[in-house]
Image 1 (cartoon, rainbow, N blue to C red):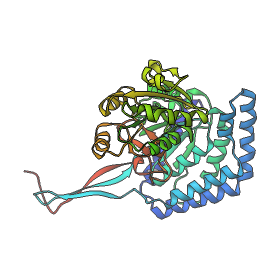
Image 2 (cartoon, helix red, strand yellow):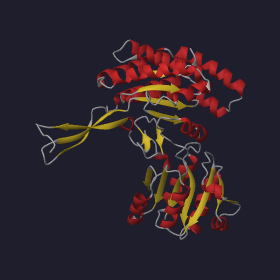
Image 3 (cartoon, rainbow, N blue to C red):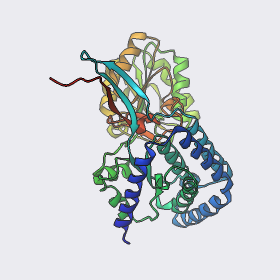
Image 4 (tube, helix red, strand yellow):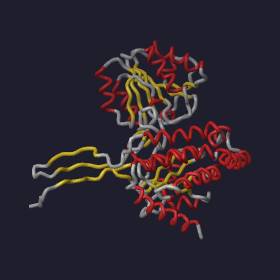
Length: 418
């Protein structure tokens, strides 16, 4: 059978599974998730053995040390994957939740109820733990999932899904709920992205190049997260001691992630006092600073920031700094150069804090806190499927509720329309 037909069969199986799964009880879903956690731990030797095949090939192919680290399965990694399954089982089930209810003048009682999206395709790179996280979240939210991991992790992903499916086969939940594309040809991705009659949503997780390629090919709605150009604006009324610590955390704690600060905006009234302090701490941690002309007059030996630096997602110990005249200039800069990901204001001025919250249209906006909190787990959502910078249908970190939609439910007692 050719790849195109194989993908179609996977999608058909997923659609059938999704219809049954939509009516599964919370107890049945949780029971399966907990048994999956047990099975992953029981089969850890098998997983590590299959993962070793991917690691050998990765080293032959010259993958970077960082990529190999993300790819590697160890006992601790598998324990973390199992714990992730337990945590999802402990989360409230969004399916069937009534989100609102109101009565019309004619007596009709109108409400909204959460329901699964249906079938979700997830295209991702490197990390086998995503296979487990995505499977758990989709299952708990009542969705079937089709997983297409990177070619570098094919043996690991097939092994993980085989364990999850074995648990499903012994349960009331269809085995087609979780499936993996078992080959690495790019033709498989292209075929998957055309099946809008079977698949309801595509979620790509990876670099900007991958996401743009998926968007360009897909007939199916795509949750997009191109990049995280995150800003912190230090207002003239900021507590500067707090600001130094927040900015340092946002840039240095994990510079290679999408919610790390990439551009620091500083009010001109405090720049001469604040910038030398924050620059000293940043440079001690190895941060390279690129600044506007005004910044370079205050922080010596600073590289000049070019226009493309304001758009840059460095994912590294590099920081762009710009001095602005007021909060409006900061917001205008964010509107032009930001990526709708995460922005923070450091200020003791209530009016400016509220203005920033109201006028900045990114998916997460903070006051007096690090951008690093833009994360599903940190925000109390449990595990997240990703971060959306697309306003339809979800915006920001996506947890279980973002893997559902709502339908209208209406109670009547004989009403007819006139």
